[in-house]
Image (cartoon, rainbow, N blue to C red):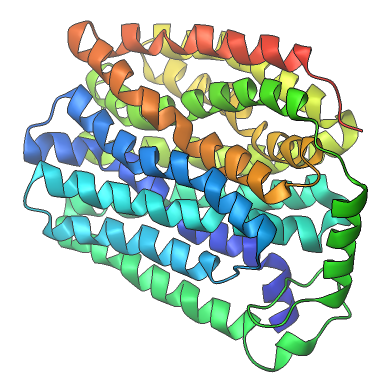
Length: 395
């Protein structure tokens, strides 16, 4: 049992961490109603959640390359979830911003070390393994809004359930990675413990570091693909509930379910993207995602009814989520000597960077309307597609 938990630990913990990240977007209608916020102010909450994380994650990735810091994993997801719970006692907009920022710090701690854990222990099937890891995050993003939707029924105090989830996650981490099982070093599919390094994994990692090379030029090009996907991901996460309420005329209490549906599709499609990348190649999967996204987002924006909204959501979700695992692996391959740093960029900024742009999209929605603001996603998707064709498969 302990070995199974170790093998799938990164997936489970990624899910737990992204419970908090996913719930914040679903709470936007709640903030608008209870604090009288406009779209710009609402999107600025996501900005605060991502700005520190965007700066910190590359640094923390570098730290993970130099030193073993497995405790970043439980501390990271605990800070993320407890910060979301504390919104229940927030008395002002400024306090919400501070808690959103703190939640982002937790996510920044979590992602680089968790991604390195996958890289160290499941390198023989890295596409599938990173796909599973990404699915954990997508599942968290899907379940987070569903859970956060409880505030519309039970009120803000319901958010304390996120602290309970964090506690269960810590207990699971201690069970799997502390105690007798720490000495087990025979199975490379088992995750490293917090206090005892797996000898085989350490030797494999040292071999990669000594023989691998860093292709900074390709990684620089990949950054534009990462930024494109991140913007698509973040803006849609914020505006799917808002579009559902304002354009589709749905109920506010059901808006979080619309976001959950989107992220639930994403969880399946993320795994599909990981498996597809092992067959087609990582770059071809990224290109395919962008090619499918562009026409589907046009339908999503300009067919303002339930059929257009949910019908276009499936290919649109494929376009966004299928790239997640392949982009992460590409980053680690381009920077073979600094896989932790690469993970901080691809996994960390791949989620948070778009939040830096979100307030400006919100400002456009305040000036014009939500549909006009979402048209900004089209040139962003085009940039991601063009840059993906400029990249080459890593050696």
